[in-house]
Image (cartoon, rainbow, N blue to C red; front, side):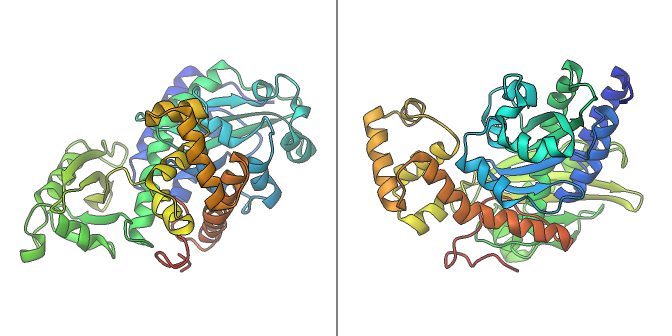
Length: 392
């Protein structure tokens, strides 16, 4: 029997999740710590099941559940090849951003093959999944919980709690992925990481951050002096941090580089018993990492790439036409060209081909990374020959 959790306890749990999201944890560590807090507020029969998404395409980049190190191939394939009502992708794309098993199946869970083949044999009767979505609308993953036969379904208070923490979870995943990619870069647009000590000295630099610092206005290239924007973001993050239980807010700044492109800086305080430090992540603004891969792999034009990205996100012809300010007929013409170049005959085949070429290898790579205690990555798997195959 599940225990009662008070509204006060759930409020404290929301605060704890918010602190964890600002604590600079890698993604796997963040999931473990956040999962314990979630289970204290919304009891379930198993630890939470997590997925991460590439927000540019809303395709899965990793899957995590304690005790389940690998997502079954058939379950992964079903997300893209079947019309099952119970899919993480549908939750990620939905406006509401949360869905229970009963809602997804219209009260008849047996409509779902995923339920019949994976959940019911394990004694699971109720489930809920929420999208991890930032305030700016980017979805970075989902979190799911399950309860067994004989246990109550997730109620309105449970759903409201999950929606309340979703934005904090999204921020934690985003920061964790950026830190992981900065410390183990694999492509020309990988983020960079600078860690400053309490006296504003450089404690450490990630392998590829030097080129980002050289692009920022300042004297880094000539004299090795940190760009003013980096120091300002670090100082802003530290200003709001009091101790390890209150690590403050993430500071963000957008800076025009010497090359004329926008670069985003994220500053986070690292406050622990050993002292105060600040981490600054530097990345290109609004990277659409799938675009160069599509160009290299299939030779799509810029407009064809735009159409493809919207298809991957589940948009229909009318929605794509409105987004690109073109006619539905023009969208169909672009889509026909995309089909010809990629060798597919339908939208479903297109999503499947791009997922299994660029994203399924990322899922498997991240599973291995978790097992070997290395940082996981977001975004698609690099196309061989473009920036290397990414295997390290």
